[in-house]
Length: 127
Image 1: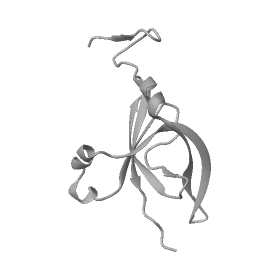
Image 2: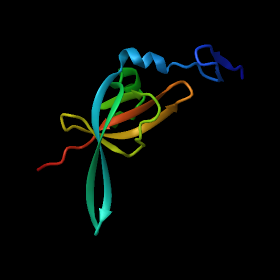
Image 3: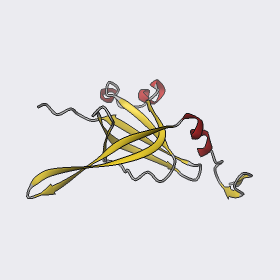
Image 4: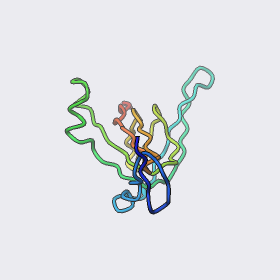
């Protein structure tokens, strides 16, 4: 495979560095990471606030088309961030409105300067 050199940082790699493009689109936002652990046979939830810069958008129709038929009606989102955000598949994050999203899939393109997460609006507990 032919290596691509990035003249800006003199880095040789298989992918061009495109993380800089996020700078013009990204917003600064505050989210909460909800961690669930079992304590005394019960689920205990703890939240940690973190600030990140990225792009949060509804998933495109083209991407939804490739989801299984029963999942197309769910509310899917894409989160694009620079590498270093400490979330992984299965984590629950909460926005400033209290909406919860489950991290379903992650794509680590850190060689190219970004990481993409597929988020699914989590179920709402009835009170």
